[in-house]
Structures are given as structure tokens and as C-alpha cells.
Amino acid sequence: YLGEIKMRIIVCVKQVIDTAARIGLKAGEIDDTNLARVLNPYDEFALEEAIKIRERKPDTEVTLVTLGPERFRDSLRAGLAMGADKAVHLTDSAFDSIGALTVSRLLAKAVTFLGFDLILCGRQAIDDDMAQIGPAIAASLDIPCITVVTRLEFLEDWSIARATRQIEGGSEIMESSLPVLLTCQKGL
Image (cartoon, rainbow, N blue to C red; front, side, top):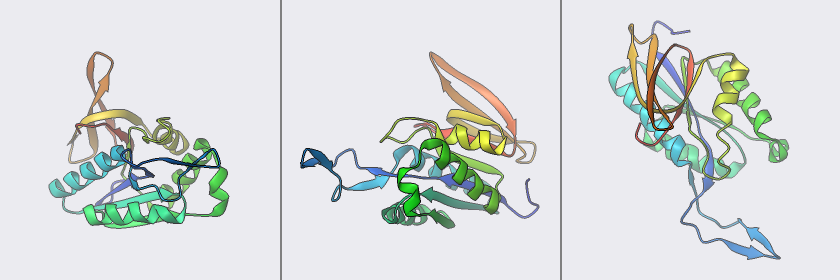
């Protein structure tokens, strides 16, 4: 999967309500129309890692991918300002009522179309805390997945990822050939 010219990194991102936002009610329901939104913090860790990889391997291309409503463009713009090379926005009103499994399958189709050597996702989104999208994308693509990564290095001329992942009571080191999907934890 590694091209001779460059490494292709996909970073899956989501826009979430800012945890500092003041939530109001309207007719007994949460009114989220004017709430401040931000790039999911764990996705931001993933993007920062992709940019660090590109600093070490300059022929790397970083592409952001998101699925959601028009307002998610703000997060893509923020990611491009941080240093991503390209951004892809999957948007359709039909996506408003789909579940995590369908989201992951659609994202898997998109990254297959774009081509990739490495996929980075946040550990979880802070709005739903499900931590399902990254592993479900990997399952759809039939590629390895290493979750809750806190350290990453590459071996064998960038063809093997060595990841330190957080586990209960400590950490463990895992290796995988590319392509691989990693979910990123604070501290990466």
C-alpha cells in the first residue's frame, strides 16, 4: 500500500459541542442551535500526530475526512489551518439519522476511494464517548487496529508502525505492518 512517492495519512475528524459551551433549553429540549462547536479533542491529537509524521517524512500527505452536516466544515477548516493538506466532507441529509456502524462503513468507503497507508482517529468523540468508529472502520477495511495509542514510531523504512498503547494499569507495545488504523489518546 505504501506508494514510492509518499505516505498517505487519513485523519478522521468530528465536530463536537465545546465542553465550555453554555447549554440552554427550548421547549424542554436542549437547544443546540447556537452552541459553540470545536474539533473533537482526540481527533486533534490524531491530526497533530499526522503533522509530526509529515515533519519526519516530508513526502507525506495528510487528508482529513468527516461525515456530518454543513456546520462540520468549520472543523475541517480548523484542521487545514493546523496543517492538513486536504479535506473531504461527506454530507447528506440522509446521514442525520444513521448509527455508528453505518458512519464507519461510509468512512471506510471514502478512505478506500482516497487511498491510505495509515488512518488516525481520535480515541473517542467527547459527545457520545462510544469509541466505536475507529475500530469499526478497521473491521470494514479488514486492516489491523491499535487503540488508545500514546506513542508512535516507525520501523523498516516506514513500513511497520510500533505503537505504545494505554492499558489498565500500564502500557503495552504493539507492532503492525501498514496499512493500519490507530486511535489516538492524549499524550501522543
